[in-house]
Image (cartoon, rainbow, N blue to C red; front, side, top):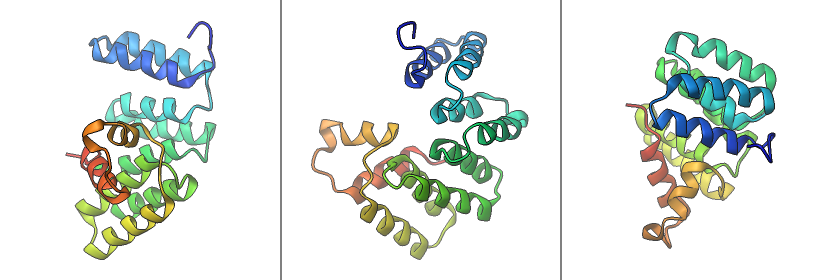
Length: 171
């Protein structure tokens, strides 16, 4: 972080290290500093939304959208808020918006499919799968963790999509 202060992924990993260590205060302080150094990093804002207490997530998501409106990571985080609050039509709209903004973001497609598995019809699920396969996603933290795993070598896009969607479901 000292050599590359404007690299959001380094800040994000630092915040996650603090959270894994159980140091929530240090993670929050580090996130505040990270958002000052990288105010347009969508991955940081998405993590900041997830770190907030439930009652203040809406305010944090509003700040995130104001700072970087068309970032698919933020749109996906907002979609998950709507999904959790059972605002299903809005969640579907925001999931679709994330996929349209960045068609190669596999995590967005997997999130959309996980949502449709929980709340959609078989036709809606098939449409998401078909659109995702035609988009050929290749990015995303969860997507890459599955595709780069040697145990999953040779899986087609649909199989990877379904595996990542299984990781992204809301309990």
